Amino acid sequence: MIDGDGDGAGPSSGAAGGPAGTHADRRIGWARAIVETAAVAIVGVVVLVYGPNLILTRLTGISRPGRVALATAWFSVFLVGLAWGLRRLQRRHLI
Image 1 (cartoon, helix red, strand yellow):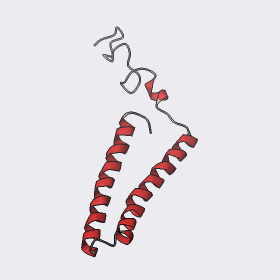
Image 2: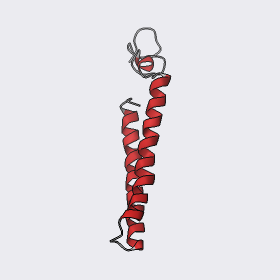
Image 3: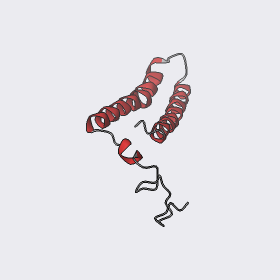
């Protein structure tokens, strides 16, 4: 759409081609970035390290190969889940 100045960008486009003013709205401060990084790291370690470790050490009613298979499945499912969840949060500009 031509907006009159001939650049073809349209009346509501910013420098990046998106709606005007949204680039500055997406910025987060250092404090928020540090807190979010720490939260993601803590959740990742708990789910991806301590979860499988507890499965391997506490589920004594299951054979060792069964516990290894369960811990591997746990790790794989939650790794994909965390990656998917983080991507969704990024898409919504929450992190």
